[in-house]
Image 1 (cartoon, helix red, strand yellow):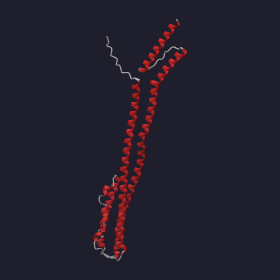
Image 2 (cartoon, helix red, strand yellow; image 1 turned 135 degrees about the horizontal axis):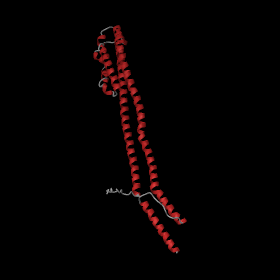
Image 3 (cartoon, one colour; image 1 turned 30 degrees about the horizontal axis):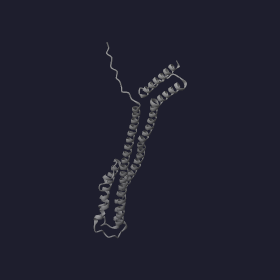
Image 4 (tube, helix red, strand yellow; image 1 turned 180 degrees about the vertical axis):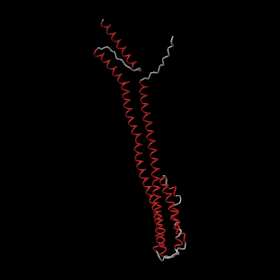
Length: 272
């Protein structure tokens, strides 16, 4: 003889448990979707703050380099070319440009992206070449006005223009990075809004499903029982309501059927 496998009996879910389970599922979905929305918003906020701060710092550093170098070069031109009878400065170190040198210290820490760092390296090389030529200014002061003018426009100015071109390129790269990051931030903002939109849509879908769930398992069975009772009471119809549920509503339906059957038996006995 074959041994019959024992049937596994699952605990019945009552109406209260069914409703509670639906509420728990709905609350869990909304809770986790809210957590995702908050996480995306926080992450996007940190990213935007960091990126904008880096871009502004890079642009400010590039503009400062451009401004200081321009002022320094104009100062050299005033001393060496425009003032033909100017006296020789006592301290030749003024030609080294302390403010300019200070502006180029820790230059690599002012830029973040690889493109900016590569452009900053080019600026540093051009700066070194420019300062090597500037170091000749002390000797050129011993020359006459024509020699100083020739040295400035034919020796120093071409090196400075190349140096200035690298700084202009660095400024353009920093500005382009800001524009690109702004576009990325705009797209990222749309992406960060998607979890919130999805959570709202999921919430609406869950509300509709929960409404269907209540109608199917609770309201419709009660309406069937009510219709069966009215049919028996007002039209004398036989109470034959069948429910597919396996909970308290099924027990209520069976109890109502028993009461109706007893009532019919009682009426038949009175009619005899």
